[in-house]
Image 1 (cartoon, helix red, strand yellow):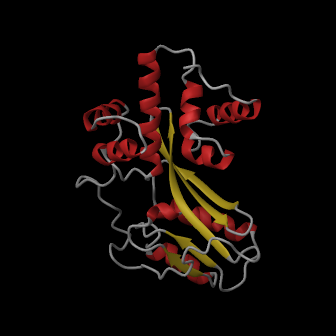
Image 2: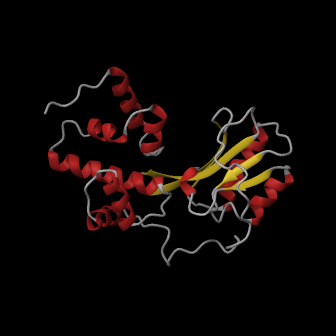
Amino acid sequence: MAAPILCKSARLKYALIQEYRGQYAIRLMCRFLDVSASGFYRWLSRGLSARVRWRQIMEEQVMDTFATYKARYGAPRIAQELNALGVDCSVNYVAHILKHNGIRARNGKAFKYSPNTEAMTGVADNLLKRRFNADGPNQKWTTDITYIWVRDRWLYLATVMDLYSRSIVGWALDTHMTEQLITDALQMAFKRRAIEHGLIIHSDRGVQYRSNRYQALIERHGCNPSMSHKGNCQIN
């Protein structure tokens, strides 16, 4: 079967995604640019041997899935997710790729959170309730942490988005996923925007967002914290 002919617009979008690989999650860029991730991987692998092409595609898929689910998924769940998307792979093959890149899920017994964060406190009600639109600026913000694979390690990017314009109003980048990272991002947003009391700031239930320091920062600015229900971390 002949390969599909790409329109110029799709080729330009794929080239843009390739340029920013390692800085942003591929699936996020594909969704933003309205192209398919599978189409990008096919475009990326043009001109390579079948074996090299398959290995490259699988590494990209595994790493991107790992980042999409915020480093919470190990080999079994990544393999399950990829198979559900129609990508045929085994748990052992995914585990080999993860080991080759020196990464592991942050859900094992060996991973311990900072003692400065409260384990079971600081959970806020879900005030957003999946209403992802706003009538004006600075009414609803969402914040989250994503993972960016750069050279031989992960970097952590915390962002704050205004749901009215979908603009990133605050961000911070660090080599560690800490309270400082998310408070720096929120502090930038507060400095850049003139806000009023009652602003909803929505996040998942990650331990950083439940920390006393982060909650106190929201309270000092007269804002209302909001958190997704348990098991809905992908919403952000």
